Length: 126
Image (cartoon, rainbow, N blue to C red; front, side):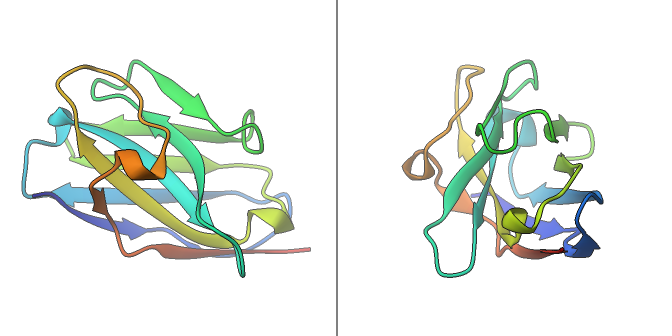
């Protein structure tokens, strides 16, 4: 199993930036595809971004494309989500997820992930 712990959430004004981190432990981090999801208040959890094992492939939801950047540092067992030009509609609990994959592919569906962090709150004020 792999354990995931998110950090970096908080309150920010619209137009501001935050960087979320997802620290992994328990297994070889580079064996896992990683993803970020979010759950806005009163809504279902939704896909935000994904990155392959090597970091060579990434994929984004249309709503964050051009504003968010997913990355990973396999030496530090950590995945990141850099969020720029934040909007009030980005307010949500953000979760990171991991799935062991033998191929370096991105995983974009919630059901494609077996391991989840506890979430970190991001609030964007207008």
